Amino acid sequence: MMITPFQIAYKNLLRKKVRSVLTLIGIMLSTWVLVSLFGFNRGYETALNRDIENMGYQLMVMAKGCPYEAATMMLQGGKGLRYMDQSMVNQITKEPEVDKVTPILMQAFFDPNKGESGGIAGFYGVDAHSYPAMKPFFRFKKGGWFKDNTADEVVMGYEAAELEQREVGDETIVPEKNVKLKVVGILERTGSQDDGTIFVPLKTLQKISQVDQITTIGIKVKKDADITSLENKLYQLKDVQVVSFSQVKQTIMKLIATARVMVFSIAVVALLIAMVGVINTVLMSVLERRQEIGILKTMGAMPGDVFRLVWTETLILCGLGGVAGIFLAVIFSRVTDLLARSILPYAPKGGLVAIDLKLSLLTLAIIVVVGLLSGLYPAWKAGRIRPLESIRGE
Amino acid sequence: MATNCLSLQARDLTRVYRRGSEEIQALDGVSLSITKGEFVSFMGSSGSGKTTLINLLGCLDNPSSGELELAGKTVFGHGQKLGEKELTRVRREVFGYIFQNFYLIPTLTVLENVALPLAFFRKPGAEEEVERLLKMLGMEHRMNHLPGQISGGEMQRVAIARALVNRPEILLADEPTGNLDTKRAGEIGEVLTDLNRSSGLTIVMVTHNPELARLAGRRIEMRDGRAFEN
Image (cartoon, helix red, strand yellow):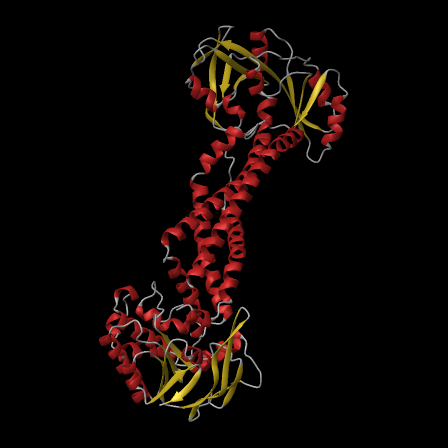
């Protein structure tokens, strides 16, 4: 029997359906941009942290000028590798801050069968004992680690095995060298660059590539140890460079800061456009209903009642548009992810856009507050309409 | 508002409008009394001041000078002007309004349109009035229709029900049949007469329609901002 101001406001929006829907679309798109931006802001850092944690170590020491990332090594066609003596491992182990140390040898060989005109195959020579200890979170899809440092065996990352179509028990050939190695383990997906890596026992890879040195030393620092002090000590070692992942993270975050500012600016512009859309829609609706609003006042509606009625219309528009925008952002988060990857200088593995309930509610609150601010002027204008104006307007 | 045998008393009401440097005297010292239960009609040519007068009597506007008392209480007087909120308070307690253009909300059903005033102000027991009024005005079979689905005469009946839902003391009708054909206008006239006779409702009506005006017990003619009782 009774009708509430909310029902009146809702039904009023149905009068000009096209206009209301267009405004809703504007709000929805702004919310989509905003929630995706917030999701990216959080997701990127989480993914980066995950990438760094999955390294298993916080510091890397390598010969000066040596690329420390597999992708860079591939880009350089396996060239540019610098070596250092394995005795460096013992020297570093003695430092009190050091928990675990693992020697690594990166090697790249030209594989004429890879791709259309051949490509680079990267191999990671790792110590059969200390490396697995650094990566206790590795899970095997099948098989396990090689038995010792001289075994003619390999462990393949999830994507490497998929790409080469290898199963445990198969053989794989080291290009250029034509050495056959047996696949003894295939890792589950980690979401890091390890997925594309082929791990070979250190001594075996040294023998194949006829190099008795190493390219990298991974260092896991003791809990609560002073990493900076250790870094400074490592810098004293001759002809080495020290890569700290916290520094790497900071550098990457600085790199993407520009992209974040750009996207944030777009979001602000989108929000402003939506705001103007809301003001236009609600103000037009108020101006068209001047007489009707005046009549509401003859019925006993106070200026505050009319203000609330118009404000409720804004609230409904922003609430519905906001919820739709959040759904859109969740549904298309994968597309946003791909888009972000295509423009970012560095994108870690795993989802870059992390949208959860808390984030969604926060965005919805922002949209509603912005919408209510947009509705202030039309609502105030409606509240000031005098009934006499409606009578005169007849 | 306390009941009193005198519904409304106006003393020397004037209303002057300014258009640029020009002053227009829309109402020129009108004094009149309307007793509870009266049906009063105002007739006159365009610009005679009848709408200005009904606007002042209905507290939709402040007079330039003069006094107005409603059921013994001064609303305007002694140079005092009421603000919009105060005027609204008086209006919702005392008056119900109907207009030539009905002003029903097109997206609300007949029932919802009648219940609309209750969303803002509700006298005790007013909820029960909605269906009673629709039944009384013969509109109960149309209660779930939208205004676009009913005739002009039916729309004015709905507007009358809406004006009466908060049980006003005075019904102000501004050209209530101005948009209706002769048959529908006659029906609305009958409704107003019935309301006045059966419920004792005070009705103040402005009309161009002499037949409708004749239904009122008291007829006042407006000329050049002055009121002349027939």
